[in-house]
Length: 89
Image (cartoon, rainbow, N blue to C red; front, side, top):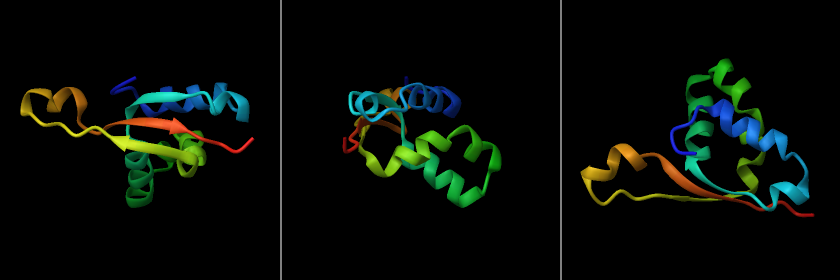
């Protein structure tokens, strides 16, 4: 889901808002860490509202940022990460 709006990620998490479902999610897309930083830095209530489920699972997510090794790929992969949701059942 690279470059989707926060609402799309939040809807995915909300639709699977059960431990057994969230534990099965592996997601490639925008950095949850970046969403958290933006909400913290800019105090944007709009972003906070549209990403509240993302922020709720952020601490339970292992996130691995994609390193772009070439400017040719920067536009496609900047701020992208693999997310492994790992909740305790």
